[in-house]
Amino acid sequence: FLGDKRDNAQDMKAKGRHLYGERNTEAKLSEEDVVQIHHLYKAGGTSTYRLARRFGVGQGAIHKILHGERWSHMKDRINTVEPLTRVR
Image (cartoon, rainbow, N blue to C red; front, side, top):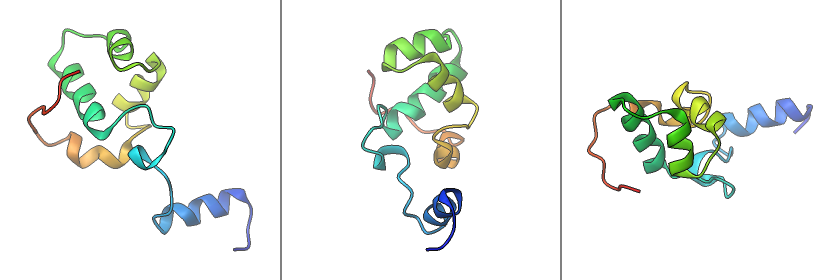
């Protein structure tokens, strides 16, 4: 593939070779965790600080998840009402 690093990254993503979410071996959260984070925050009564402590990630990570900057491939699942299947 000819191009710079950015071109290569965009090509990988377009072809489904991008490691995102649980496919990333460095991920600290599962897809269920991300769904829970959204449900808990939308329900109220908890802060990004508390969610970060509960799930073992930084407050910035929670903020980015809630604002669609991370785990954005989960958008459709997060926007649907699903029962919580696992509680940490």
